[in-house]
Image (cartoon, rainbow, N blue to C red; front, top):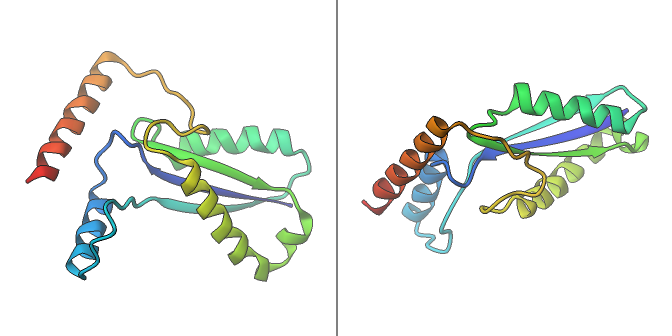
Length: 141
């Protein structure tokens, strides 16, 4: 049994309206130390397989083609092949928290190491730049 954790979040160049709303709500609570918030998805999968390399390849395909939108989102895939942890439901919560902390630390605004680089068309690049400019303008207001 292999346990996989997938963290999906908007790319750094894409405006995150949910994260912006969370950050503003935190400011309204009187906490001024939080300067930025990002909202994403956490998905945990249990796979009945023994071959870790083949499972990783299959899960990469699932993450890229089904769980995330590669144009605007990055993902981090973490696998745990330990059979003991997969059998014990109580161990799932601490493992998930550690994985989230590690994955959030790995995903940097510039270019996450685990994210696949995607070649964009000129039109997609232009649209992304427009969206980034628009996000900066709305953020300044």
